[in-house]
Length: 153
Image (cartoon, rainbow, N blue to C red):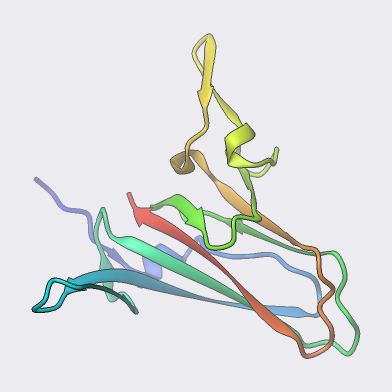
């Protein structure tokens, strides 16, 4: 049995986000490690991955910062899912998703996938893109972050 091992560079190569002109974006990817202490208490640690394998749980953090001298309005971040990662969830639940390469958008619970002559409800693994519409204006110098989880396919 051949095991797929991905380097961080391969994982992040297709990973990008699109934002307003004067808003800078940066991103970090972490692998989620679960451990138990001597008393059986569970703890979760986020580590920078050197390599990942199928089944590894990843946490993506997108940071944005208004580097302009004016307030950014109608701020939208669109993030394609890396092809090697299956979307799981966002931290805040305010996202819209696409299951067709960014052509159509909606809440995951409202989307349907064509299956032969019928349809089925979309599941997180169908997501190809995530989009956040930031409703609050982002004043000059302000910053924030968006977080989502995925699993290496």
